[in-house]
Amino acid sequence: VTLIAPETVYFSHDTEIGADTIVEPNVWFGLGVKISSGATIHAFSHMTGASIAENCEVGPFARLRPGADLRKKAKVGNFCEVKQTTVEEGAKVNHLTYIGDARVGAGANIGAGTITCNYDGYSKFFTDIGEGAFVGSNSSLVAPVTIGKGGYIASGSVI
Image 1 (cartoon, rainbow, N blue to C red):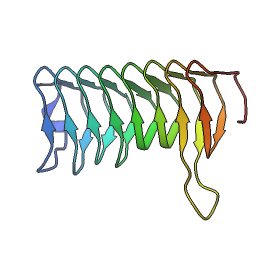
Image 2 (tube, rainbow, N blue to C red; image 1 turned 180 degrees about the vertical axis):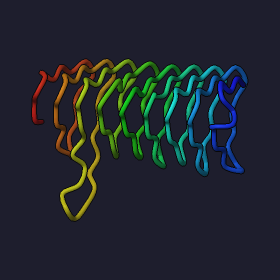
Image 3 (cartoon, helix red, strand yellow; image 1 turned 60 degrees about the vertical axis):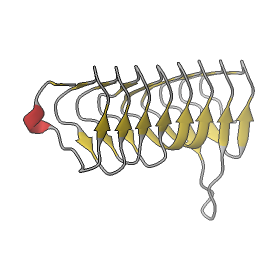
Image 4 (cartoon, rainbow, N blue to C red; image 1 turned 90 degrees about the horizontal axis):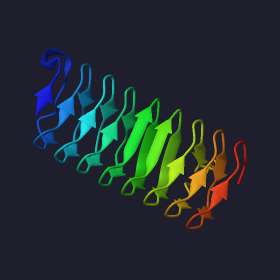
């Protein structure tokens, strides 16, 4: 494990980090964080109750909330929040995005500014984004909704 500035990183007592992981400055690991080998955690990221698989990339300025499950080679970029969501192998949630109560299929790409609208004021609902799907920037996915395998959502859409 490489800590770029260890004096600025906070670890919970139960944090698990695999070999060859890089942690940049000012990262906060809350309870229940497990990181497999080869991951990169960029600066100013904050995570609690998250599972991060091999060779994932997180941040900078990312927030992973409980139930965030990043599979092999997944990416959650800058200014993203992920909660109770599986981001499958090779999927990208690159920037300025909220994904909650969802599944992002393998190889899918989520454009900047996309949000899952998972709460109607009473209940939370699930969004399922299929393998290889493309969701254009500034899209709102109003749950419950399913985007099929290879689906294409144009920028600015409300689905």
